Image (cartoon, rainbow, N blue to C red; front, side, top):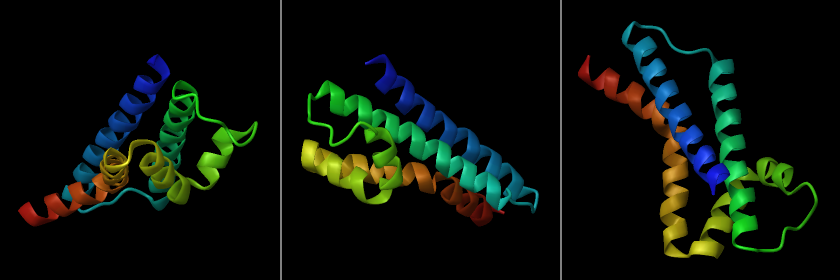
Length: 117
């Protein structure tokens, strides 16, 4: 349970910190480098993939391969919504939307900063 919590808190914290940084840079007429956005998405996908692996173990669902974590990471946009909906039904849809919002948070903050300036 600690690893699941760590992964979720890490993903949320990473998103919030990066969104605040992106919003600050946007307010000063600058923007984060594209490589920084790629690194942010990589880290977020890794943290959420770790959460899926630990969740699969806790729910005692069969894992398709030895390198299940890499499989989740490689097929992240397709597999994660499938996994969440298949294990949690309508709550899984809400979790999928929440995960998408984590990825979109920096752009939403930039949009907010643009609208108030």
